[in-house]
Image 1 (cartoon, rainbow, N blue to C red):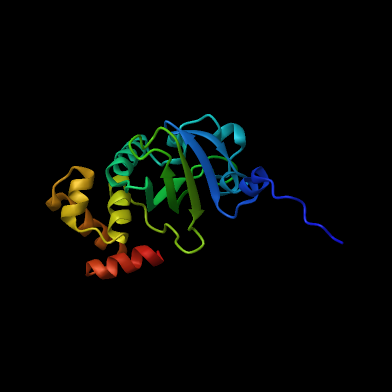
Image 2: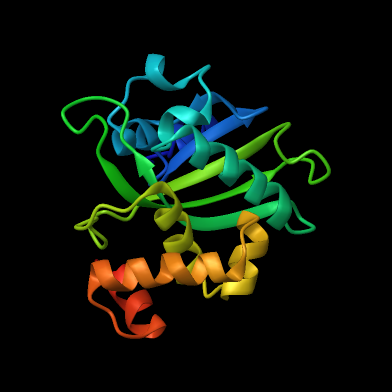
Length: 188
């Protein structure tokens, strides 16, 4: 009789088909192989480091942290799509779209401890146009269906400023409506 070996949860974590990170106070305490592959990194470049190394800029890291706290639901869950940065290897510094979802173990202390999943979207969505950090944030929120007022509140800017950035994005992608812009962002 051919017996299946018992499931070892460490093996399941390491072999998961998405990148996984365990965190404490926005430091990456542990990660799996897929996360290292997604970011082109070694364990030494990730474990014990701040999530900031995965972001295009320090400002984007800080604002995303604020957005997570503001949008965490009652179960401590959060998800979005954002532009991230590869850490090492040949693609070091390359920016790419990533779906990030996670859970704070205690919703009252969102950054104290959590588990986060990362999915590389670059095979479906390529960054063909250079965006500023603020344009990347607004693009990510537009994809989620947020209005100018909602984006303004989340980013602590006026809805009019959001409209200015939306117009820039539309020009860069050759879109004439917001719906067309979102469609191009999703397919870009």
